[in-house]
Amino acid sequence: MSEFSVIYADDALLVLDKPAGLLCVPGKGEDKQECLSNRVQQHFADARVVHRLDMATSGLLVMALGAAAQRTLNDAFASREVNKRYVAVVDGLLPAPVADWGVIDLPIQLDWPNRPRRIIDPQGKASSTRWRVLSQNPNEQTTRLELEPVSGRSHQLRVHLQALQHPILGDALYGTPSSQAKASRLLLHATRLELTHPVSLQTMVFASEPPF
Image (cartoon, rainbow, N blue to C red; front, side, top):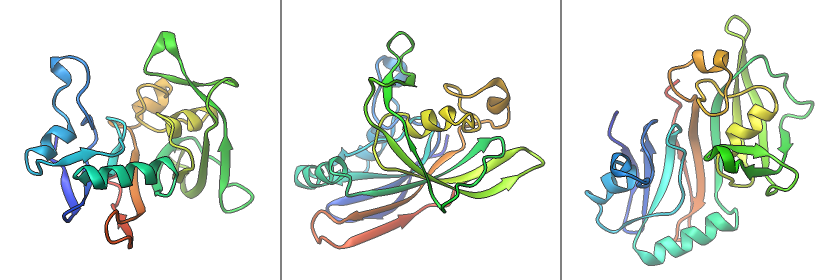
């Protein structure tokens, strides 16, 4: 597993490129203590968690330096002022929406007997994902998508694409045996972040090309 990359750093803000297969924060148990936040804090002692990516997801992630920056960034994420884009490769040929962007509006609930899985459930939390087709590969029967989570539920992109019957390739939780076999990792990458700097209040945009 590769070490994380620092995309940007100043006195208040860190932007990192997380490898797939690395937890963002420690999990339960001795075997789940190796994580991005612990690694980063060895280099930036005051680095603080603001948001997370799934362990299997790679790409851009923000950490704050200091309590004041953490509060500001937490508020920005909570009020959906941070624009996030992902690239995914899904199973099957997903037709492009009539408009440039399609929207998936399906409520998500924790599947308690099968944690940490999530399910679509009318009693779940409202969840919205914008998506558009970037390309299709008829030979491999796959589609490359750009995704924008409007809400920020756990596993949202993975659950929403499963609901369309086009699971993300390599998804061990939500994929079919066929879609899992098509990739050795989850083909989901956080490729773009746009946010307001917590101190200068400047708009900042960061990008990371998918490694797949």
